[in-house]
Length: 265
Image 1: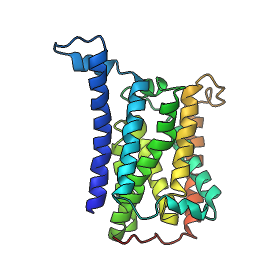
Image 2 (image 1 turned 90 degrees about the vertical axis):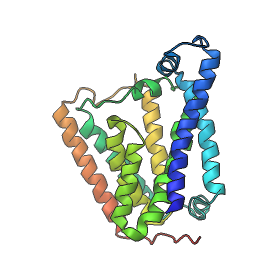
Image 3 (image 1 turned 30 degrees about the vertical axis):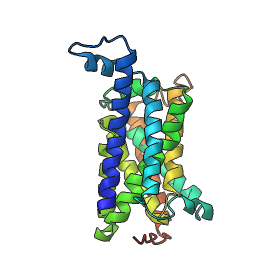
Image 4 (image 1 turned 90 degrees about the horizontal axis):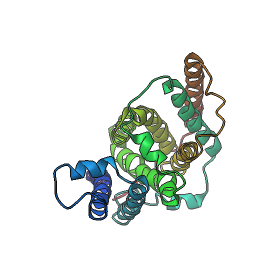
């Protein structure tokens, strides 16, 4: 249990440390003066998204290294990819994509508060360090913590306890409803993919693909969207069908599931 708790705490510390480093940098180099009340608030309101993404990328890479070197994650969690992709991997990743699109369609009619997330992500478009953070480093750090570390520890308490707790923690760290609600549902799907193999060979590629598609949408908002003129009811129904189809695909995948690899201390 202690390894999962430490991994989760380090995850939060990584986010906080990156923000503190950037605040110090912006305070020293920006036009905020050296004294005066409200300077920190002004910096927060005018953070450079690319600077933040680059800083977070650096701290996240260090964080991933710490997780792997200190054995806070399972043994062979990344070397398992050398075994090749498991049978039915396209089916599993396809199921996750269907669930992701389904959740997006269901929630699209609702104006969920995003706490400035859209503006921050939009400011990161066409930045190579930010792209690597969003598409690769971020998903890897999250899968190591919320799937491999938390699920592995909680699995003896019950399969669905491990799934729900990991998904809830995954939703909370996103910090806003716009990301939190989809993150909870997709956290459950990613947990099921993780439990299918006992490693990251399914959930990490699925997570990377999901974020890559999201980043492309940020970079190219002018790209044609065939659903932009669909009524809200049609979007919701289509999303519900995709979600149901994705869950059915996951259920079928789980019928041939393997046992989670045991990690010896």
